[in-house]
Image (spheres, rainbow, N blue to C red):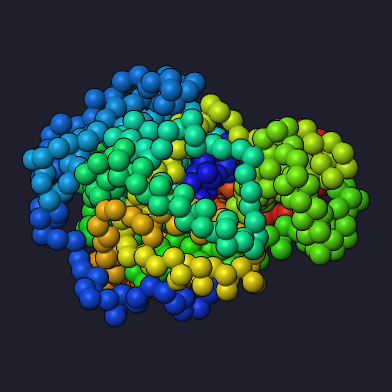
Length: 546
């Protein structure tokens, strides 16, 4: 999935909900062998790793988690009710007695108070563990969501548990380059790159892959989605839970689905929000191409919205005119960076977030309008890199790259990448090449590649899983939700029609939230596929409130 710089947006249900409170694909891509044609067909996790997981889970249950005050750097401004601790997991599950790493965990105990009647006590239902996606995002902030009005009923009955997956934050952190060099600005973002620019990016991808190996050493190979699923089972045991209640967003849905297939009897309830397609033939090369194609449609949705509000933004009354204004801004920024830091690359990154969240549409449109009408400051405030985030962003990028590169085979011939992305960029220019550059280190990856697990469960093996999806989600295209639904027997899909926000749980759609709360609180699911009308589009506005 894409993109390292967007983890806080791409998966963070918490931050989206807090901010909102009073948060089509390319067919049969050539260039990478289909799993069915590969020399080694996808296989179930090995017996050694399964045994190692059992050993680690037993140790974790016996040890528990010693919760105490949270470090300020980890969860700033943490309320007194949120506590932090660590859980030990094997670096290599095939050797559970070998090197151990520690994952940081945060928790807010269930209040057991009815939010509508503070004198009424409600029974606790266990722990609700959340992962916001990535790979590379931290869920340490999740317990804070209990303060959001819409989540107080959930916080009453569940311990809200967040954690930083392996490699993230203080959980045996990964790094691939000096953070001081990570947020380079201004940068280019050519829609149709020259051969010279392509050669430069290939060289950079090779260097980045080498840097990951040099800075992480032999442990690099152990940062995988399968190990993320195993870590989740150890965390379940450490929390004292016989069965897991889990909520994953974006990439969190992928290893959530892996967990469901690997440990079906350990699942109590599971919510998969913005589901990633777990088809082993798409992990991860094809899924990124499909994602780039979907972003083109979402970019068109955004342009159409701007055009409908020409009275506010003065960027044109048609999608084509809005595109022309964006192209003019990109050309100007290539000649002179706004504020010395915002070039075409920073412009693109800022507008890519609008493909994730409609809430970002007004601020992006206002900044573009201001820039084209002579005021660069809103765009600089919006898009300029912040040095204080460099270390976190570099860490997120390293984990993203390591997990996706380790998870599956990738084309190792640059000609394959060049062919596939050149073809796609002809019809989907907005995101194609930027997505390719993000993932290109996987072509030169120094660690062994795995074969993705073929996620499937049979009838009765798993409790009903609730899958939530927006029909026009670009970061996790809708076919991924359909695929996940087919593969997890007994699952139920709730669709927000004609909507594209990435991650819909706990947002403004009362229909979606009704299904979410009924499931988490009572275990009730719709009898069949449920459909919800779209949320209201954002209100056009300018200024600081945009």
